[in-house]
Length: 379
Image 1 (cartoon, helix red, strand yellow):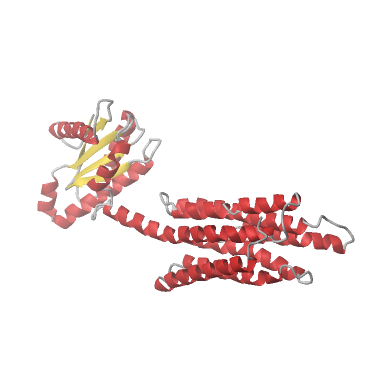
Image 2 (tube, rainbow, N blue to C red):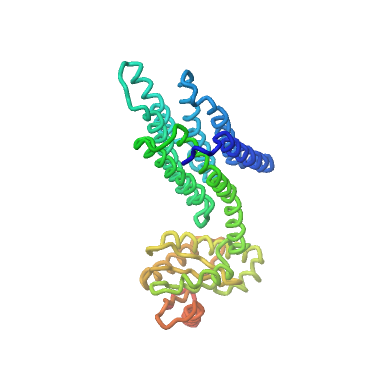
């Protein structure tokens, strides 16, 4: 099938593509020297280039060890891709299992020759089959780890997933080569030709996926900053407007919290003291949402001024009441002066058409708590 394809030209195309992306990664690294993951990805491509350029010896029978090391380098180059992703995700760079695919590739490639040296024999295609199995193992193991680590680094991103899936997409070409060798349907250069043909598409997708990861992370950080209140760092109205459709479901409870006599705090102690009270309240709300008795983490939102919401998905009225009382207890320990909060609770009901309906009911309960003497919870 691949007899008419020029293997040297395919190899040159792959080398040029690697050099191009290596230059891009080096430029990105030089622009931001703290982003060492770009250096790892550039080093991976350069090692891949060296291995491809050296594979002109692959058909020289006297250079068995050189051929084995070059094929192993193809697998080992993917370790640097993984360490770059792990560095980006702030995970440990090295794990013991990373050495298994290169070792398997090296041993698989050399095994037929070692058996012949000991007087035994293996089928003529064993070198290609065992080497391809090591390469396929590496693509599968490293591709899965890239997907796992990229989800941790950019939970809603696609760049790392594309990179991991692209690496795993090399596996079918290796399996094709293995089946072709076993069934004697392949030419001697089938493995190299299939891999290099795959390179023409997959190498570009892999590196574009890696490039997309930092961009997605920066975009997510920018979006997150626009969703955070500048003073208290809890979520703001913009976040609520974006996510209210996911919050409007049965089992979600809402606490509407307001500082009692907040204007008098500003008038008596100054606006700096008022800001400190808001920051302290936001911190108490954040800690309460992390410790609340719900199946999913809660969210604290500043609606403006001294008004806050605590949204508790998959909660219950008793859980919402405990959270409100925990917040009041935390406020009483803050100091340096005495101040209190009032809280109104409401849950999502089947007839609610928007989250504003829930907020309105919680606001009515908050007003009831104020009328009842403040520093209390109404539901």
